[in-house]
Image (tube, rainbow over all chains, first blue to last red; front, side, top):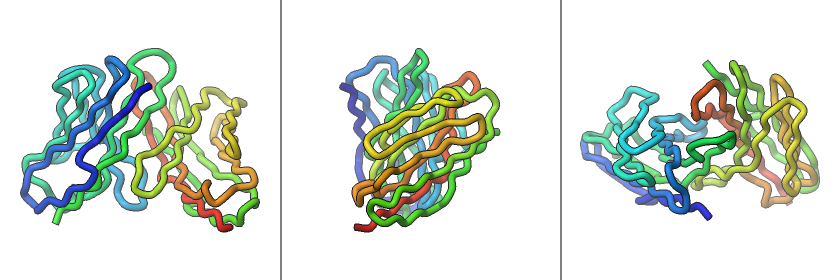
Length: 114
Length: 110
């Protein structure tokens, strides 16, 4: 069966500090990978998605970036955090081909920028 | 741009009191409509995918239906453990992205 991991679970960082969140998927090959942010009381905002190694699409202009160094690894980064970067960050995966495109989410990382 | 609107924002039910959640959507070329359950502080959990109008899916006390403009999530005889935020999302066009609604938070009192 497939499993998706995210770490850390919680993070408190000062404004201007760097960020690195990691997501890994087990039990599947060549998945599509996604990073979302969920603000309190709001829906999920898609930040980045990737259909393969080194292939990243950005949905929202911001000071965040994403990388996919391995097939089942997705990293979200920032060089300098802003207060507005606080939120709940979710990684998700979906099958890379075929009709079924439901996404499966990780446990999330709660980021607080102080 | 794809739009997904969920109503109501919040729903308080007595245990055993059946109700429905609504998800209305405006998309060009719907490929799938997805329902998720999200518990506080956790990632969304996949529930159902609906592909075409008239389709229905069931899981325990939950039943999802789809028309050309909206989807309903029916909760039959809910229990306190059904308390959660229920998210609706649509996929349209030729890419893999999902557009999410803001969710309906359901609270079931014993």
